[in-house]
Amino acid sequence: MIQGCENQQIQPLTRRAPRVTYRVTHPAAALQEAGTLALFGFGAGSPQPADARCIRVALESFDAPAPMELWQVDAPVSCGVEGALRWSAGGGWLFVAIELDEREHGGTSAAAKWAYQQLHRFVAARGTQHVLRVWNYLGAINRGEGDAERYKHFCDGRAAGMGDFFGEGFPAATAIGHHGDVHRLQIYLLACDQPGHRVENPRQVSAWRYPRQYGRTPPSFARAMSLPAQDALAISGTAAVVGHASAHQDDLDAQLRETLTNLEALLASADMAAGFDTLSPLKAYVRHAADASHVREFLQQRLPGVPVLLLHGDICRSELLVEIDGWRYA
Ligand code: 3EB
Image (cartoon, rainbow, N blue to C red):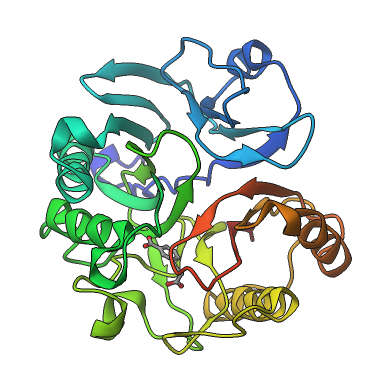
């Protein structure tokens, strides 16, 4: 008997994770490859092609020549510009970036609020409403004491702009201070038409439960996000935080070791095999330029073969010297 299609079991498409790679390449060649969703250059000297998929991240690379970061999906990609937003989409995935001058939006907190409102309005309207991973770069992130610190204002505005959009749980995220124009706020994200699975680190208090000493508004992010097909883990900025406290003040090696322990705890928490490999691109954000070569050597020894992009950036707690984020494919 021939079954009508109304009787067929339609399997929902599972969205294969975008491939993230670092490459020393000419941007035009990378943009011409099939499925290129986004292309990132790092630092003021990086190429800036006039293509909505290209972002120049305001963090200087410690590598010369600086590699570019490439995101690729298994589908045709379309892209465009809408107001302050640049976007690209394909195969159920959406990349959106916003870049603005805080002074034009009433300061750090108001700018973050406005940016997040723009971003979630856009993703919701496109049906790719599951925001899985967000990167935030602001200038002078540690300027100001206590509650007056710029990072704290950013956290206020981010939470206000998110509103109840993340009622089911926060995306994975990174928030790093750049050394470019202090008023420049850059945010970009990866969203999907299917939800991911949030992962927390049992060694750490969830960021949104941090006690009051870390600010009025706890940081709104998940420690990691397993992508819809569970074929990759998007790992948030991870540092030497144990419980809610920063560990190993003034001890770079101990912070690095603690950070790697936190990364392994996240893999275990996501039910993934231990370890990172040649397909697991990581970024290490290093506060002091003088520490960069030591961080590189440490990671080459502890994570041989793992692609690591070393970037000059400030971690949102001034006592933290290094932070690592990235991807692990299953
Ligand atoms: C920490 O564990 C370090 O505010 O989005 C890491 C990742 C950190 C993301 C954010 C902050 C953020 O609390 C800081």
